[in-house]
Amino acid sequence: CNLSSKNSFTIGLIGGRGDVALATRECLLRDYPNLKIEVLEGPEIIVSGIKYQVSSIRDKNIPDTKYIILNTEEKQAERTELYFKNLVKELQDKKIDILFVALGFPKQEYFISQLSVVSSQVSVRPLILMGVGGAFDYISGRVQRAPLWMKEKGLEWLYRLVNEPWRYKRQLAGMSFFWQVFLDHQDN
Image (tube, rainbow, N blue to C red; front, top):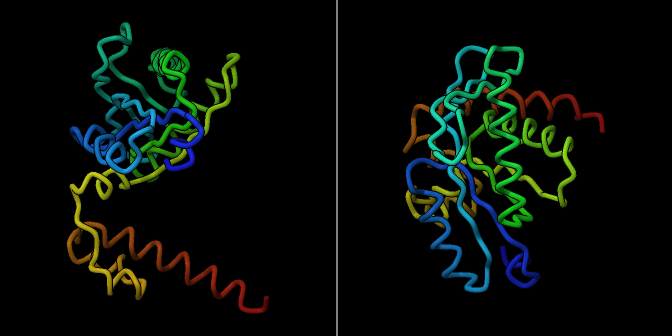
């Protein structure tokens, strides 16, 4: 954001729950008053099994798009494509250079992938897409960060786990993954 403010890049924010993206915008503008920043309303993405489904697009400017399924093998593929084509047009109209996507893992990764595919099919100016998970919650102050001593000792994950116990499955999967990577690279 600092670099964007100094170089007149336009930042776009999409995702977050409720008005978190708007609150994030206000916080960023306090820190970077020259920042050009746009908030786009993001879709609700519901995960059901291995299929990723976007439901209830709230943007009234997108014609005839109520449901979007990111798995384009499904019957909503045409509406999915229409949504992303309209989103690409909106990004171009607003001259957004960098789009921060806060839909959470793995939804934002699928969203970014689909947006990249549609962007590559049309002649658009360069766009940087970045998944930021729950960063809007922290920037906006909606979720409190861990105390400094915990952050300094690398224990912010523990603070989040204590305050958001429903994340334990993700934490266990992450620990298992990182442990396996560590063991696989012991010889190096």
